[in-house]
Length: 424
Image 1 (cartoon, rainbow, N blue to C red):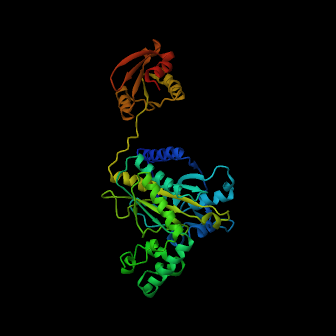
Image 2 (cartoon, rainbow, N blue to C red):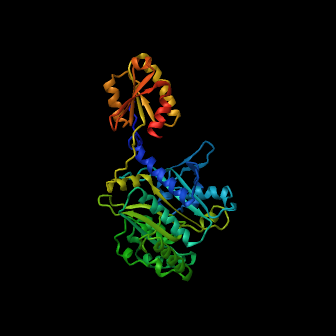
């Protein structure tokens, strides 16, 4: 039987997986500096969660969710994004009662969307995201954006563009919604069926349509910025001021519409401007969602967050030809000659590893020359050679692969000597 990997998924093999680990490590380190703590939620949730939080007019809910009935006839869905699960956990575990507010969280893990696979887009993809819950201060909007930019820049990305917009408060959004309905309604039959369905429920989503993006009514659609009330304007002005204070360059794009229904006030995206990255340039998206906690049964709690796909992060690194230096090699490779010496290296290898060294030995009874080639492939800093003669003399020959220098070391104190030599 010849079984293949499902369409839209990938195997991440040794040699490639180290890139993922490095991105995850950098993201964790920066989250620690910014005081965001990790949260881990289930891979599947009750379907109702995403219907209520993501919005039933979104492509995610209408077309992309992996939904199934379990043996108890409950409708469950593989999570398509991370915010809804994080907020559900925030409410269910009463994190709004924590002494330290806002509650600042990050998550990382697989998400699932049934969409057409293409470069950098998969049906199972890994998403990293953060959520800050409990503060309506525009300064935390700037902090969240700064964290996202810092993660990308920490691995050398330079061809980045940050765009921001304000979706306004409830009052501003309603005024804009009415204006959009009046604008599109007379000619809505010229738009795709999705846009027609969204007209009354969520006309702002029409602006995000990929099929009708070139329609003349798109270019002349009313801008949300013209409908911001005084409070919303002040809020957006503060966010822009703080970004300027942080030396973060940005552009205001009134057509930026996040794909989920729960956003208001600040919305933002980080794009790759690298040549050859592809037609879809968005790397990261996020924004404020001041009504989501209440929608899921919690108290009135403002929130803001972002998420990015690790796959697209890696694609952006490739587009900028950034070669991540990850494999630093192992500390020591044990070469053995003869049955007794080979047996002895089993325990010696374990002692090295127990002391914190990365070490390896031969398991295929290869000749000494082939063992040295294996050490080269593993980028071993040192090779320790043990033969029958060395074993009888209670010695082991240690060679620096960088300098070629060799020295004999007493076998019974080799690990201690090795510690002092490499200053591990």
